[in-house]
Length: 415
Image (cartoon, rainbow, N blue to C red; front, top):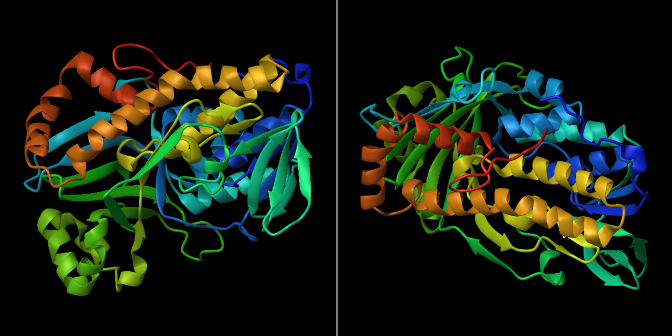
């Protein structure tokens, strides 16, 4: 995958663009748009963006986008290669075994600490000549007279832009101000996450999951190095454990050892990892939500990343979809210099891909995180067979890699 992001960046008309939110989508969009000759101002409510969160998986399609930004090499250097997805029952019977290379030779994912990816993007943004506004919480976006006005929190003065890119995350503070129909549904299940050392390399090369029905799920994924200035430079993994939101406090009240016993009953091989967990302060509880919004633009405002289409993490596509949003938005603005038709083209270009992954995530979530018993029973019976059927296996691999754009046919075209 080595095609240029823009066939002729100089052909684009230069616009003043406000990007709101310095997450994956916002920083990637800022870089692409700045390199295309636009005057970009990046607003971020946090005064000093730094390492946050646990681990994420960058799929082959996301790696392609990072290659277009010239950032694939540093991401590979600080992350960890993931060649396959392994899912098993408590008795060790495989439910899933999917290898990226079976879809395309050399394909793989990269597990990476969220902070390491953020640091890589932030360093590139700082070097790109983008106007940076850290500590600037935008509380109003309004459109009038052929432009967009941006107001920072508690400020009386608006700033004027030709285009606003809203990328302020799943629980966006600005989404409700935009005249686009949308809904947000918070999932009843979340997860505890933590980052742990893997000095003996026991958990490298694969994202490993263990399931007991859909009520218990453990995941372990290599993520490479911790972001600077962490002194521990050795290999690390992220460990996640499904937790129902309304049971999280009760689980903590039972005590750490009770939780460890529950995990070990499901996955005894996790013992060396659990030995590193000394208290609940090492476990961060993450809440997820499903965000539905179509179209993803209104006049001169476009919404990208999780603010536009957040899903559960079952398919590991959050960062991937955000990166692809940024690439497609830049291409649409390059192909059509007028903003309003360019954003209409963006919505049209993203519709099939995003609709598929939102639908697939909604379908899979109760199979892996719920109180259901029949669905996970069917999962354990049928998925091993599906993984062996060439046609079905190919569709599962395409879904994992982030390249499907429809249930029956359709493939994401990035080159």
